[in-house]
Length: 555
Figure 1 (spheres, rainbow, N blue to C red):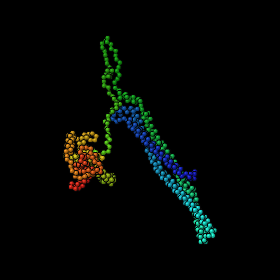
Figure 2: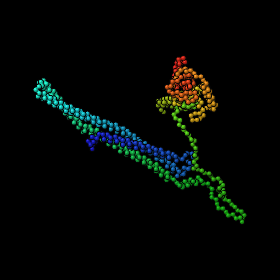
Figure 3: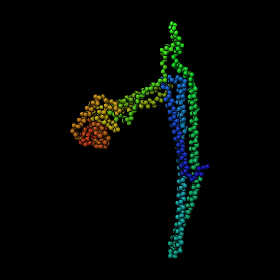
């Protein structure tokens, strides 16, 4: 039984079948992978269940677990935790012994299949090329034979005609001989190519194709054996943990058998026993004789009046968790440029403090490694000092990275502290708000009272002062005479001027400059006679007139 002899003409079907076999193998891999995910999920749920019912330490609930039935329950929870661990083992073993192994085998199988069918197509192309060559020589032989017959007939016709000259007859005779020779050559060539084709065809159908199909058959049979072995491994992985799972179940049974109802009853007695004797019989009181009343020392009244231990157990205190609502505000720029100046300063200061703490931690680690290295230098038998050089260099590199990061945030901090309102002119111009999606800029000081989440960041007096300044700014802006243009500018970025005194610009737009940046980061521009305002200097490229100071400035 060989594919090479039985399926010599089924090249395309074999190609489809072997691809189907690879698809089946990949489907089995996916099945095992999902089984491992189920095992992990099941193990996680078992662990969470065991943890959920464990007694809380240092609580009254822990006192209840002195009873044998409760101890057995704790043992059951612990055994279930170990039971969950075995399902994790199943998942790990299936992943390492089946999934990884089969995934690698599938890649090798695809490569081998590709090479085999490549050889098959190459053999097909070769035999097709030989067939085309045979057909070409056959047609040429046929054509030359017809041409020779026509030349012979023409010669005979010329020879029989008495009106034709001898020269013309000789010429026709020579032409017929030439055509006859060409036909003989074509016949020999056709015969040679035919023999060659028959040989190639015999080799193709009896040697090349059988060998290639035999390789494909062996490859397919190896795939079938491999998937069978994987199924055996699948069962064996489960079987390997059965003894340990059995021990876990035996542990639960042993814990259940350790329950002692008499012992638990005794514990109840020890917990609630008062220690008093029951009251004695009440004597008959004969009122016809002198009163002789005796009261037992252990009377009912005494037993009721004396202190009885107030035993409380099993109580479960419930604490309230204060709701912690996490607000999703989207992506925050690294320099916190989306925040108002004061809020930004606080965030940057907080970041600098965190980085300084990390630097101190790394420095402490470096000092510890240095001390250890000194010990190794003094006592070489304790260790090799050179082995610590790499770690020391790594820590030093981390310190340098943290210092550079700190310098970056300190620079931003210095920038924002320099731009915080220090004089009325700066506060007037810093009433605009930078777009948080564009390069960092200063936010409106009049909005410093609240952060994005609504908390106070400035005192009421500061808010009032900013409001007054904003009002002054509005009045000043309305009463000003139109200033002459001192140059032009091109918007490098889009800026949305949402606050008083600012103006919106679109990237690439050209406008007139009517007032330069005076050190506070704002430039006053005009679009037309009615639209003018401030934009961040870093958002525009300014071109001053020749008469103005500075022919061209770029910020």
